[in-house]
Image 1: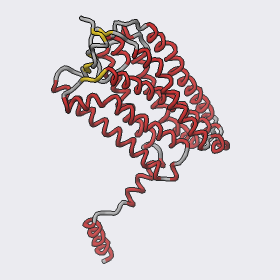
Image 2: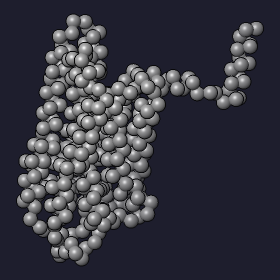
Image 3: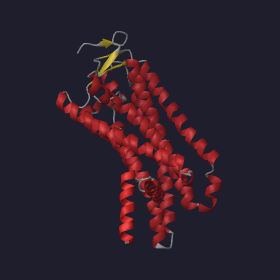
Image 4: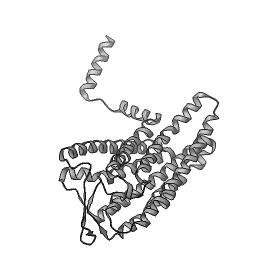
Length: 328
């Protein structure tokens, strides 16, 4: 295949999931549905936490950060499919592609760090409940959240800089549904030794393994503390509290390991697409369900708001008549 120089090629063509227009349309509608549910679920959590004073706690503060990350990540990764299904334009500029990669890596690194902060919050709540309010105060939580966002961006800068220096590509067709680092690296004819080294060593150790290790250590201490609880009800309540965190933790790290813990030369991009969609769309969709709709406080607030919503005039009139008939 003829090499294409970066100075001549100003755009990439994103294939998506299929070359068949009908199948691509069906997948686009499914992705649109998942995206709308994801945004709606996470926005609901944000609105509920902002409106209700009882939810102004460190746990829900970090859940809000996670919801914002999920909305941003889903929008960044899925908008190519949604736009191309309407405009039939599946091209993206090289600058836009590199920015999309930078945003995706930044948000993913920030999410891994947020999971560390959330596991630490649960560790303090379960293992040191008497000191919880003193340790997890508002300035500490704010500093932890800001650090997660900033470190996520800083960790992705070396990758973005190396991608920016790529000078030639064998093709401008990306076999993926968004601009990801592995498909772009497969296209380039430039030397990617540093990128492979960074992703498989520094990227994995600093950006992934370190948060993974800290999170696992927190959960180990939590499990040990829970097992020491004498009552069955207490153990069940404690496990119920952090089991949702553990579920999302396992899902996220499993999908990321399948996608990136291999050299780009041996990765099958067709088989990586479903895993990438699972990471991008499904995990973000499940987060509000696993984290928040499972929590009793959220359920109570949703039920309370439903009860406090005024009934339509016709329905209110029928209820009034039914009440009169019962009294008769």
